[in-house]
Image: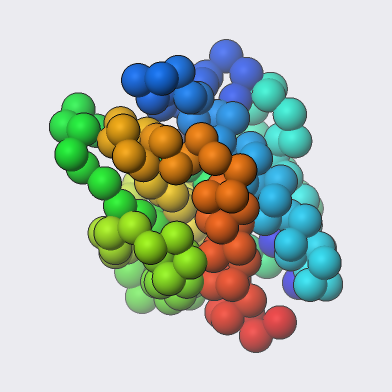
Length: 177
Ligand SMILES: [Zn+2]
């Protein structure tokens, strides 16, 4: 079973940045690498869009996953909103009624169970990495960097590790491996 892990942003694109300067690209990468380690130890084949702080275009991310022949695509992101009160975990997929919808729900539930933030549920989104990938693909928004409490959590190793464990549990539950 081949899982392609996409750490959002990186290089010239830091993504969201918290009030204290924590960069989404760095959080995403750490969670992605932790997730890969866990899945590898469970017997999955894992590949990444990036394993360092480099720029990779959205089209290139999807192309890498397509060419590798991934069974599933998981993109890791942190959310942000102008209102610092917004918080919680949500997961996106491209279209209803396909396997990605069930994968998104399973992973989101497992992640919320593990990290205990507000469950914002799942929703469809026309994101390039979801649209351009040929396998079931989801995009996980772990928590909000614009929320001071959640940004503080995202800055800790233990919370990021828990994010990876939660996502891994969801993938395992969905794929029965
Ligand atoms: Zn992002």
